[in-house]
Image 1 (spheres, rainbow over the protein chains, first blue to last red):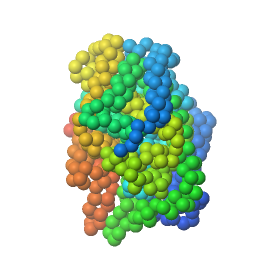
Image 2 (image 1 turned 180 degrees about the vertical axis):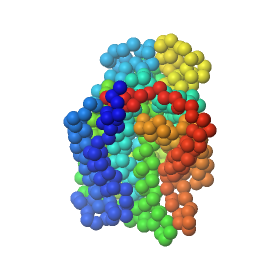
Image 3 (image 1 turned 120 degrees about the vertical axis):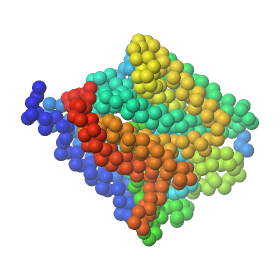
Image 4 (image 1 turned 60 degrees about the horizontal axis):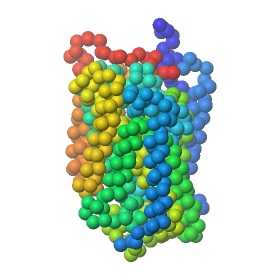
Length: 75
Length: 515
């Protein structure tokens, strides 16, 4: 009933979702962070880097949530 | 052997008594007609953002997680931290795919993933495959929760000989079975709040107090053997531990929300928005899981593995005893009681949700589909209550009579089995393009090959894939779901051509997947 021109809006896609790729890229390549230096409060880089991405991932997810929730769409 | 720790035991029993009362009282919480399956088995789909957060968190971060992840760090080192990228990958998946599943299930009163697949693809045999994968993957997971409970009961010095040694476990399980039967999903939802608060207290205390006692993170990491501190560098012609680390993280993340208990938790939310908010809030648990993995290193640094008073515990429970030993070594007895109660209650919450999820699957997708196609609401809810009892006692019998190592093997295999439902469920919420028989063949091949690889790798979930002179050790679930997907995609046009143009059946409409 909402015809051909409504289909694109109904796929549920938002460009904001691309932000999720950042957190995937950051942790999907262990050679990049499998090192001890630099340490932070005595913690090797391997550990605090991944903890940092838990927090950054949560922030990115929150940004996407608010951006998508406030987009002018029927959903 | 340890002395009986009376103070810890009393604190433990008092907290257990409290959640027992809470579990029964929960029947009256946001009261609904418990003679309807969606009221008993999904809490009436009325849980808002906060309760869903506690419920899903209580569901996914199980007692076994809190024992096994530090135990893996204690035994194998850095590889255990795959749990951190795993949780980072989980939340985009939860955010994107699962609100769609929630909407379509809400619209059509689907209680299980197999209900959805039955409606979407119109094939009862495909739905049966999803049901079997769900039940088979869930059963050992319930049994494993009991292992977590056994470890803390043993840690308090409650030992017995023969079957008398299992008595505390049997009592805990009877309590669990009774309140699940009477209150349904409302019981674990309310207990999850208590459990999560206790777990947070126990985890933060460990992460703050132990490093102070030991003189800082620097000293702790200095005590970790060099080969455990970082991932081993891969040798020539292999992706080595890097490949294992990444495939474990991605494969486990893809599998997580396909488990029936995860889907039960998600479907009980009151809206798709509640799920999305949760995707942004659940990383609170991820952070804690990472901290808990560190606790494995604390136990290494504290040297609990070499202390004579813990020798009996390590002998009986292996590395799973690392966390209880650390608490016993570094905290006063009353706090040990709180920490152990957190783990013990942390076993009951997921065990309750898992047994409800398995009961929903049996009731809806086996009994209603193949045995009695037209039950009354009351019959359906009553059937689910009975099945939840049978499932739990099955798990109890398993853990009492079979070595717990088998439960661990089967749970590892469970991840490989459940991920095979990904094309039908997680991709099914996006597209009806797949042919239902192609999905079924893909599932069967993925399941058979995954089980074979698991056995061939000596009952471990990582298989060294050889290809063109290179070796790619990695998570079998990850490899086999890719094969499953390729088979499904290749066979879909073939089977469609054989069906000679009959329109594919689909009980759902595109609009059902959105708010």
